[in-house]
Length: 180
Image 1 (spheres, rainbow, N blue to C red):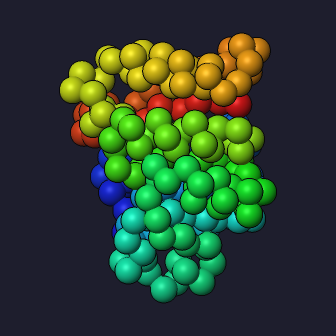
Image 2 (spheres, helix red, strand yellow):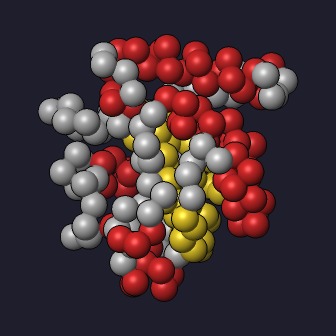
């Protein structure tokens, strides 16, 4: 078992099922790496040829993780920084946002990375963004509104939530998945 809170929240099982269901392979970006436990797990699955992480403080990232993943230090709301990473890496099949959980930061990352996302964009712990988890419709409508400013209507219609929460105990393990 790797050092990540995703085990306690039931998310490792959810990710395993999700990635298997959608036959996910290729590249993965995690925003909010902490020590890198999720990237270790992702690496152990053999599904990903490229693993990338962004964190505001990379001093806690394990050396082992730095050996197989590209780790960048910076803030997810810095759109030029995030855009440069996306371009340098050739985009991502999967983006997992487990960063600040602040709506402005999540929105900024989503707006910047969605055009560089080939398969799934996942926002973790969106129940922390709103006091009531049922408000995901509000979050999702906000994201569509944000994208509508940047993309044409046909692209926006491709967005949908395909997975709503990971654990029945609802211990902060909610994830919103947007499929490309």
